[in-house]
Every structure is written in structure tokens, then in C-alpha cells.
Amino acid sequence: MELWYTEEHTENARFSIKVDKHLFSEQSDFQRVDVFESYEFGKMLTLDGLMMVNEKDEFVYHDMIVHVPLASNPNIKNVLVIGGGDGGTVRELVRYNRIEHIDMVEIDKMVVDVSLKYLPITSSALSDKRVDLHYKDGIEFIKTKENEYDLILVDSTDPIGPGEGLFTTEFYNNCYKALTEDGILVNQSESPYYDRDIREFKRSYKKIHSTFPVSKIYQFHMPTYPSGHWLFGFASKGIDPVENEKINEWNKLGLKTKYYNTDIHRGAFMLPNFVKDMMNEN
Ligand code: SAM
Image (tube, rainbow, N blue to C red):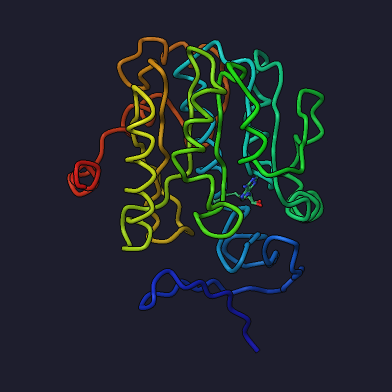
């Protein structure tokens, strides 16, 4: 009998991937954690029935969450990752020699354990000596931090369950306080396509826009996320990710990437009209 993983993207749209094996399924203290072996996307990690990472398209997400801010500010040394339990974000960060320290704050140890076991390439850098892993709630962790991080990456689940508080004004204010003068915040900002995602995107964008002097949106293409059209928010106290001659310095590093390049970097901030309109709506 054929086995299919099916995700409900809206009440009226579903996305299915044929799978060979259901390798893992357990309820953690926070969410249901599943791992599948699929034919098209390799191993896939899902949380509460939503795709988090798979072996085939994770490079797009992890390239775009890390290399865009790293090229925007060549002086980033101290980084905070909130969420990111699969390890893909940390894997891209440790490729930069200049990064001295990474705090990764993941609420759910089961996600890390399962990723280490089933997704060894994605999680390969979690043992890097510059990485401190904290099994805590990122919302609480950041409250005590001041002027400490050059970069905060919110590599979170959607604004439901444990991820909900990562989309609030209080949390963004705490990020502002925790960042250095040249600090950058990048946050997972949902999709501009389906109604439920649009509501969340607009809500988090408005909050960040009222907290940070620079706040922009950039886009990328994730075949397995709802609609395939996904967004990150970029916020800073002054650094602009596009009007910025420093971006070209990234090319001198000689990092080999499968998705990111400095043309994509600039292009990603050029948004379709329907997304621009949403950003201006109340
Ligand atoms: N790439 C994925 C996506 O956008 O679909 C996100 C990666 S997934 C590994 C996100 C992680 O955020 C999950 O492992 C979840 O446990 C973690 N998370 C959710 N809320 C959190 C919180 N309040 N503090 C720390 N980690 C949290």
C-alpha cells in the first residue's frame, strides 16, 4: 500500500509527498515530532504535521536566513539563534571564521536529538566548539540580554504553540535591547499567499516596523512550504541590507553556496506589488 504524507495548507488545499517509511513519531512536551523517509525530498522532519526541514530543499531556507545578514554586516561575531533545532542555521553560521560565539536556544530537546539521529548533514555543526546549546524558551532567554548580540536569527515554528510568543511586540523590543548598535534581527515571517499566513505576516511585520528604524522583507522559494513563496523579516538599528556597498565583500570569502549569491541578496528585497500592498495596509 502506498504511504503519503499530507499537509493541510488551507481548509481547501492540501500538499502530499509519497513516503517510503515513517521513521519516528513521538509527542514531546511541546509538539508532535515526526520523521519520514520520502522518495522526492529524502528525510523530512515535521512538527505538529507541518514541514520543518527535508534533505532536498533545506539549503534554500538556511542559505537565506544566514548569508543575507552576514553579507549585510561583515563584523558579526556574536550570534543568537532562537529555535533552529535541526541545526541547519548553525551549520551555515560556523562556516564564517569571524563568528566567535553562537547561543542556540531551542525549547524542545527532542527536535535536536531526532535531527542528530536522522538528519546528520543538517545537524552536522551542532558540536562546533563555538556553539552553546540551551534547552530553554527563547522568549524568556532574551529578556535578560542587553547589547550583546550582533545578530539574532529567529528560526522558529509558526505563531502557534511554543512559537507564539516569538511574534509579539514585547519579544521584538527585547530583541532590540539585546542587539548591539550594528545588530540585525532576521525572523521567519510566513508566506504572503494564503489567508492564515498573510494575517501572521502582516501582524509581525507591523510590530517589527514600529520597533526598529530599518525593517524590510525579503523572499525566497521553498517548494515544500505552503505556496512555495516564503518571507523573512530583516530589521536593524541602522544597517540597510540593500543600500550597502559592503555586500560585495562577501564574494571575497569564497564560500560555496547552492542558493545564495549577492545578486539573489539584492533581488530578494524586490517584492511583488501584492506583497508591498500588504505591508502598507492596516
Ligand atoms: N525551518 C523551519 C520552518 O520555518 O518551518 C523552522 C525550524 S524548526 C526546527 C523551529 C524550532 O523552533 C522548533 O524546533 C521549535 O521547537 C522551536 N521553537 C518554537 N518555539 C520556541 C521558543 N519559544 N523558544 C525556543 N525554540 C522554539
